[in-house]
Amino acid sequence: MTFAPQLILVERNDEARTALLRINRPKQLNALNGPTMDALCDALEGLDRDDAIRAMVVTGNERAFAAGADIGEMANATPIDMLTANRIGQWDRVRRISKPVIAAVNGWCLGGGCELAMALDLIVAGEGAKFGQPEINIGIIPGAGGTQRLTRAIGKSKAMRMILTGEPISAREAFEAGLVAQVTTDELTVEDALALAATIAQKSPLALRLAKESVNAAYEMSLTDALAHERRLFYLLFASEDQKEGMTAFLEKRTPDFTGR
Ligand code: CO8
Image (cartoon, rainbow, N blue to C red; front, side):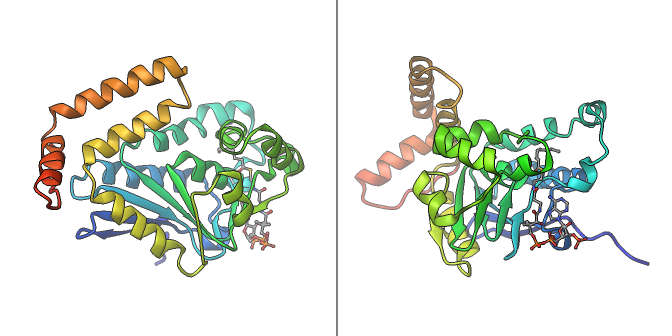
């Protein structure tokens, strides 16, 4: 009897309050088919509801974070197949995760893989990672946010170059362009991303959640509206025990103990 492999492997570290999610379709370079995206969203949503976890890392393997959406799954699809399966709509579940999620990228990060990394909160990349939107080579365009998030991250001219040629850029170029927050060695990518997640996990979970919401608002609102929104979230935190604890701990010269209340 054979068992279907688990598409997402989850390792929790309850002491650090972090969790590592590993995309696990190595033979297909982690191509993101429907079941893999479903499993990833289910796992992220489960951890988002779990009070013991405060930050997550999503990674692939040394060859690929993900080489795109699964081309085999889409090759014969009609527009109505794509629409009724709501293939891209399910990706919105990723951006509704309220806790910080880091993408730890080694190897290929292409097409839907790059779109997934960009839909998470920040990217840590190994120096051998390659980021690209090669959809143009197969007669389509990025459809899960690539033309929008990449353009916002690196600007129109560089995004046009990547999307119109399909050619990937290196981790170093992605860092210099502002797509990647941190470049490390390939061996240390996951370790460094987990260390960053552990640092983040020490903060107030309420403040993290509202900080993430407020930064994301920069993409969706006018500056005036976003500043007003930020101010409301800022005031709201003064209703939290974590704000009292954080400021009292500072004045008492001790480490705060944040409870998320
Ligand atoms: N889909 C399905 N299978 C893939 C994919 C993919 N995206 N990428 C690689 N694979 C498979 C290959 O077919 C191959 O399978 P097999 O061993 O059975 O032949 C295996 O992975 C290994 O791949 P290669 O032999 O090609 O490995 P190489 O090291 O020679 O090349 C590359 C690596 C350059 C990454 C190459 O595999 C490649 O170009 N892959 C396709 C990249 C691509 O075009 N990605 C974009 C896909 S379209 C997309 O992502 C649109 C997203 C929009 C949202 C959609 C929501 C549903």
